[in-house]
Length: 115
Image 1 (tube, rainbow, N blue to C red):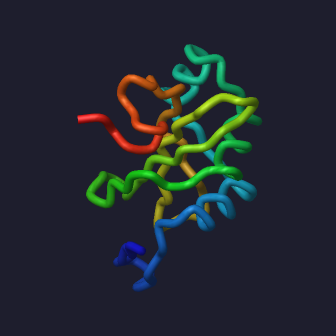
Image 2 (cartoon, rainbow, N blue to C red):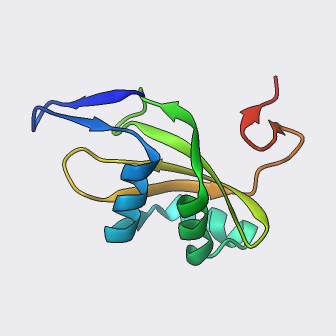
């Protein structure tokens, strides 16, 4: 399990699915990019939350700026969904950066990138 160190609060925050689920239930913000991708792939907000609820972290991007982020793989309405999200350290919010229907030709079991 990876940890991030929050310099402002001197608090260690876990980048894990339980924290993502907790924040999703409280406060979620969608970037403009994520909303465009949702329209393109016809993914609803309810499907995003269902995928998060049933999902798992498949990749972590701890070096992302301004906040570390991760790729969540989940399913909703019999569809495979990828969600890239971030957990800002200074506010209790989940940021949905992008989301899409993964191309099965680029993923093994929708969880591991093909080389």
